[in-house]
Image (cartoon, rainbow, N blue to C red):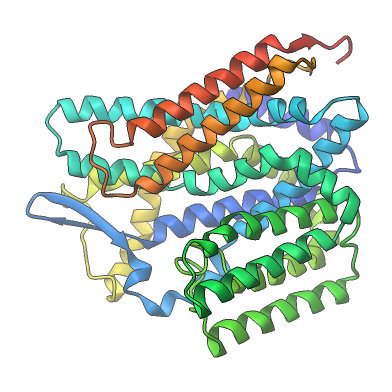
Length: 438
């Protein structure tokens, strides 16, 4: 944590006036809302010595409209596109190529993720050897691995960024427009004609459309007045109401509308993007103050660690507090359940603080500034390593709570990810040379 404080002071002092500070703020706020939302809807049960749980959204229909406030992953992908576009433009300007950018950009993402992939299976093996029920371990490991769904989607876009940014440079706003049309067509095939599999393509195209809009934001293609941005937000909200309250889509933005993403989620994304653009000038003025900007820097410095470990924190809090009777289990429909959410959230936050203190140093470690040299071996190894990492994440993400193996996570997915991450690490180390300058 001393290292984090020093880093915050250094970065705050060196932040140029040209930086789009609001993008960093929105990233931090989006992750905070995701963490809070996940913790809030976890309903834990303990009966006959067995610990289990479910998503309270499955039984609390009144919370469906509330998910419009907490489904903020579109903002995260928008900011990811902005940051990816800025980084890619800088990398290209310095003479770098796409594969080199992927190697450098994935470094910070994979270091804390690899820690999760090592700690979860090893902990499950140790706990399982102590006699803990494998079904319970499977549920706990699945709960802790829920963030990998979003990381998988984001990492796919990072790996594809060299191609996506080249496409953006050629076609600009036409790219996300076409992708939204693809989402609409996939929805029609899935909902109207009941064509299987096709709807799953929106896992890629929906998030890709928002990521591409991040490129457009960074390059000034979304430069709107406050009134115009609010009009965009109002139009998105009108479309959202029309598609859900009036139309055929469910109101809730968790579940059907995100697995896979639908046209209704695109309407919510439009609303959020309009608000981000409308608030951009005021947010940047506020973030000129050293206090708010330092908080944003500190949050972003450990943001992936917070995201990766927040559901593990919930699993630990449940295992410690529920069987011992410290936290009661009133039914979700009751007022008591809502009131007991406060100590539950506090307990999850306390556990997460401990986990961040343990693992944040992995994310905080700054890689040496370097250039990535080009060679055919590097390119092939990067493609193969990236493919193995993505395959491992996919296998773990789709395993679900029904997997009850000794590691809590499917071995095939864990090994594929670790092998891919190792290949990328070796490739990165073999292909770098120290820069002559800072």
